[in-house]
Image 1 (cartoon, rainbow, N blue to C red):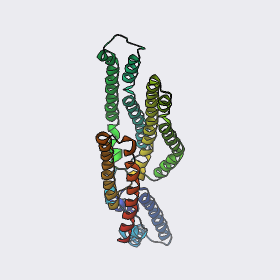
Image 2 (image 1 turned 90 degrees about the vertical axis):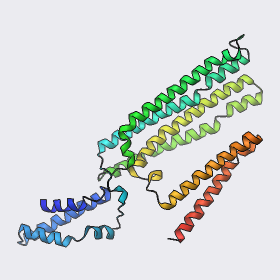
Image 3 (image 1 turned 90 degrees about the horizontal axis):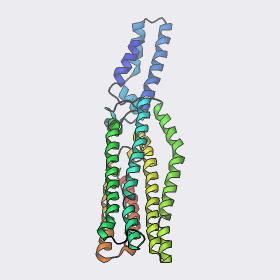
Image 4 (image 1 turned 60 degrees about the vertical axis):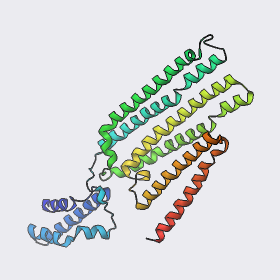
Length: 323
């Protein structure tokens, strides 16, 4: 019996340790053991039974091909991870999401003191009699302290997560763990969706304070509205980063979504996407700074989105026809 198991171990040794192949190996081992027991009951010796079982097994490559199992050469060297390693990785990813989210929040909120102190002093409510530079100094100090703290958080987060970086280069999941991760991802989906919905709604509603203050003609109201705008955007971005980081950890381990193995056409679409959106941003900034067309220049982004959708649809049809 050990001879059969060792034989199978050697056959599957050069193949990736994916869930499908692990399941296939267990099924083959079970069938070979049943055949071995039948031959023993028929009076065959141990060596005869083992020889017959192995000779009837056939070629492993032909069997994999017949079952339609795709073996990606890139996954052959991917290490098999344990459930404990996966749990530690997901927890580390969750901590990193919170840390990065806090750092980005600090970056977004860093100008608040400068805006608030400067506008209140301009209205004569605080720091009267001081020069403009003296009034701006506290706000500038708070701004740089906030940015320095954010950078420190980013560096600490990156160094803390470095020990788990190998998990993002591709790993093989043992049998049963992939199904558990898919269920965990499904359970997390409602929370992830809620965070995205709340964040998007907050972004849409964030300018309301500034709009209302502008309609009432209140300069101080505009200042408070701007501060409120930054607070709301910071919270929305925090929700996006923390929930998205956890979501991406499942996608990375399961190799799905944006982390699925790239097809050649995917690489072309990704390259075109990068170029199109960079050009759109350049056109938006050029029209805004050179011609002052901020009020209409934003239309370049929905137009780019439509053109991108048309390109991806046409390219997909073209590649399918030429397969």
